[in-house]
Structures are given as C-alpha cells and as structure tokens.
Image (cartoon, rainbow, N blue to C red):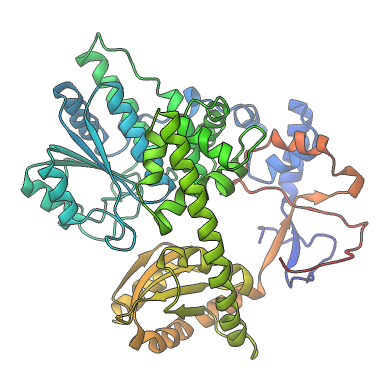
Length: 526
C-alpha cells in the first residue's frame, strides 16, 4: 500500500479481490509535473518516474545512467583490497585458479566473468559448478580438495562461499588459498578465507547490498585490473565494459533491484548484448528465436530459463561453459542442448503443477484454507520445486512450498512468499524447533530439507506461526495504479515513451494502467 492509501477510481475490491490505489502520492503528483515541465518528457513517463521515487533533480541521471557516474569505489567493500591483491598475484605468477560457482544464472555469469578475465592474461582457470541434486548449493570439502589435487593454488568462490566455513577450511588444509566473492546473507561463522567480499556482511559499510554476485565480481575485476596496471605495465588491459552483458544478465535474472549502479549495469549491458559479442549469449538468442533487440524481458524469460535448465535437470556446468566460450560451434551445441533441456523442464513443470494444483485446491476448498500451501510428492524432480512453489504462490495468493521426496523419505523443498511475510525467518524457526533437517533463505524465498514423518507437524507449525499474519496481509492486498488510459491510447508510441523510464524489473516495477472506460468481456485463467 502507498503511504497515503488513496483509492483509485473508488475500486475497493476488484474482481481479483484487491483494492486499487494511486501509486503516486500527492507530493509525487507535483514531482511528476516538475519532471514533465523541466525535462520535456511525456506526462505519462513523468508519472512513472515520480511514482518510483525519482525526483526532478535525479531525472537526467536516471534517464541516462552511466557507469562512470554510478560505479562505486570497489575498495569501499570490506576485504576487496585483499581479494584483488590475491587475484592479481595469481595473474602475475600464472597460478592455476579454480572458480567455484553456483548452478543458477548469477553463478554461471559470475564464473564466466572471472574466467574471461583470467584467460585474457593467459592464466589457467577451471570452472567447477556442483551438481544440484548430489552436491547441493555451495562448496563442499570433497570438491575443494579435488580442485587442489588438480593443481589449483587459488580457489575463488562466486555466488557462494559465505556460509561454507568447513569447506574453505578443507581447501586451506589441502594447500590452496580461497577468495569469496558473494552477496548472500551470512548465516554462521565467517569463513577463514584470504578475503570474503560480500556487501551484505554486517561489517560492510559500502551500501552495495543490492548487488548480485556478478556485480560483486565485476567490482573485483575493476580493482584487480587497477593493481595489474602497475604490476604488468606492458600487458594489454582487459575490456571490462565489454563484459557488462554478463553482469546485466545476472542482475536481471537474480531479481535484484534495478536501481543505482545496477540500472547502469543493465542499460550498458543490454547495449553490449545487442552487439552479440558473447558467442554463448548470441547462440541462446538464436535458439530462443529472439528477432529483435535483446531486452530485460528476453533475459528474464527466454535466455535465463534456458541457462537455469542445465542446473535444474541436466549438467549444471553447461551455463558457465556457454557464457565463457568464444567458439561459435561449441556455443551453438551447448545452446541447443540447453534449449532441449528447457523444453523438458517446461513439460515436467506442467505435469507437476497440475498435480500440485489439485492438492492445493483441495486444501483451499474449505473456508480460507491453510495460511501456507504445502504440496509434496515422491514423483517430482527436486530441481523444479522452486518454480512449482512460485506458481502455487501466485495461484493461491499466499506463501507456498513444494517438496520432492526421495526413496528414503527425505524431501527437498522450496518455498516462495508474498510481499510482507518473511519466509526465511519462519524456516529458521522450524529448524530451531527440530521440524526440518536443515533450511534457510530470505524474506521471499526459502529452501528446506524435511523428513516425510515430520511433514504433518511442519504443516501445523506453519499454520500456528503464520496464519494471523498471512490472512492480515491478504486483507490489505492492493494494486498500485500509475494512471488511467483509453484503449486507443495504448499505442506503440506509448510503449516507446515508456521505454525511456525503463528497464523495469525488481525495485523498478513495470507500470500498471487502468482502462476505466472499457468493460471486461472475457476473463479466463491461463
């Protein structure tokens, strides 16, 4: 809800059960007028900007964000100087470097970023992505020792490592240094790495907690390149700006706020992506049948899911290999494989969702139903439960979990929440209560491992702890409206004008308009 809680067009309960509210406060109405008059932008664009907190003074920089203006000092991040110095030392000495990444888009892009940088300096580098099912998220001691046995003297973890103290101890004991480049919340002791660069550390005062891992890696490369200019004065500098297509991809797909330097990353990165410099991204655009300039929509809904498909149901390393290769033949082969895996994932998701909806609808049939929908099956693929939970959350308009049980009765579950309800906190409380084997997450998403025998008790615990808050939030649910349109006003010209206020995404939501002069003729679920 907005601060002033102004009802739009007196719609207090729409067909979907939510109230309509003015997105703009009265003060923002005045700001929109100042933006339109001062910068010559259409009124509708000015309203979109003002409704997202952009002031008249910020408008020019917002409409034309530049890396030069918005890039923070990398050294402002805790441990960044240590991390950059160690990576630079590995470059100068031509050490073998292992890159330990995550199996999602941010992990793949971060791994490829670092490998491309090291390859520029002819440094031998190997990417290791763990298997989602058999190894799980983040470094594990066995894999770290294996990387050291293969000659790595430096292991850099990207998009993981913050909560991997034991695994980093194993790498240290085996004889390698470790540098962590991550953005996840710390949930235990800080690992004994050479450096732990994470803007979400409690002792990090940089104010860059909105960065995804690829953003952190990019800052590390900027700082490392600065050191190398002094230590390798004859070496050609790497084209760091040319790598921003990967940073943009990760920023969009990891759903971090498109504000500050993230906005500059995406705007500049899309320009690079449209030049098709990266063979892997170009190959993915072709198999995705993208016949227009790449946009945030294409990154989020066409390219990202194909990269993720490898980690979900195939070879987790395919995404990072694709983004790191300069071989067009290899890029085409991997892109076609990921496209096929994504089609398989889509079919599996449809079948799983049909079964999950039957279970969820049965629970919701009586009155309000449970505050948190929990569905489970022994026939589901654990790599898809996160997607399933997201669909169920949207369907039921409340937090939802989907759990895939194995033959031993141990379930891998994923949960998605609604705005205002901290699902990560609830999962941590369930772990303290001994109802799950392990679990963690943040406000909007969480993961759990649970024994089938405790599923009933877990459902009861969720209901006891969540019902009052979830149902209160449902009663307060609203839709923020930017303004009213006539159907004849919804033109390509309007879309072109609105693009000036984009790109839209997390933290900079797409505009919503009402068509009050028109009646809804047909509505059907899709």
